[in-house]
Image (cartoon, rainbow, N blue to C red):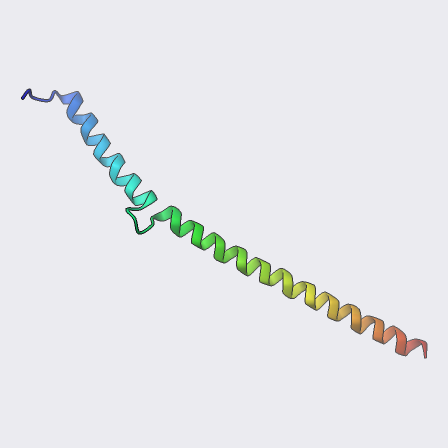
Length: 75
């Protein structure tokens, strides 16, 4: 078995660090940061859809109230 020179040792050390960082980023089967970000984005999108639905319902309610007020004003 031959001895590693300094360059080979540095490359193997860097690869080890890269492997650790990739495991941290992608996950080791339980999900990593990317999975967490996807989960947060899905939750944010759900909340945004709910807010848009609520605003649509409120705008319809205001439109009905406005029509009712106009109808009462004309009579």
